[in-house]
Length: 470
Image (cartoon, rainbow, N blue to C red):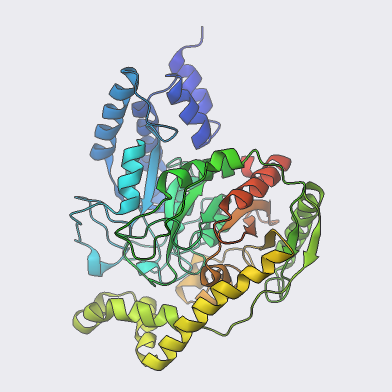
């Protein structure tokens, strides 16, 4: 006769989604302690090869899980994140637990307060299992320059997991947690999600508070979920979204039921294809996967038409703001930075006040101008990245196409526009590396973005594949 433990072991072996294990906890068919212990076992077994975690919060996570299990046995259920192990990119402050941003500069930094998103996750009942490796100070796209060593891609260990939220992408793909938070300033949620074969959502600018997050660029930073399925991303977004009166950029707008949005009909949605730049010089395998995805999306919706987005030159906003934040550390201990990070930061010193102000004004203009695009279409479709992930060895040399400009070419415009954007799996290269497609919506258009992403996901099986790790 099959025992409860046998049933749980069989289920966990299939790589269940956050939504699936949440339902088990709700029904008391699994416990927060069992899920947390299983994640900790996988971290112990697989993290040495992946290097996804910087800090594993073992004792804190188990204590949280025991408390939440006691609540559940007593009849209390906080919601779909109750007892679910979640990872945090290591630039999100956690009270009493070091937050390093993968840098020697902050190797011993222990915050006194939780970031707002951490407070919300705890309130929702999530078990915070650890702090995830990343590209140092989020200033890059490979997660190779890190004081703690490079993050490895679960699908091919000699390749990058992307960046800057590489640890978050690798941990979710390798089932070292059931979801994670990443940050996105130029594509740092979506690009690693595409490279690791998972779902990554960058919300509307200001939809999720960035208070308590080590900044790269105040004008461009976003926080969002990285998960195995679109439904999981909707659940995680619902827990962290909302107005924060202590955060200057926070949007004061009602938070819809994102899981309800998944049931929305998509047959009437009009798709826009911004081919200029986004489709230029694509890797042939990326182009083929994108075209197949467009065929599926075209059948699900009212069809597609080509559109053109507001054009812009490289804005000096990110570099100037990054330099402003790091100036106190650059002036005292520049040798503690990774060489590539230091070089990029020092480049910001050349930006004049006039250039920054003009760039900031242009940013505001672009965020208004892009709304005009949505008078004729509802959603935009592009490849997430122009090429597949590179090897770690080439990333160490900063050889294209892994530089900030190239691998984030298709993602960074949507940070500038401030629009909600999701990357979902849409195929694999012949060598077995994941490929992602990007769906973007209008301001606060997360429900439509999630609805189409979910419809596509249910029409394909790319999300059901898992990396084979020993």
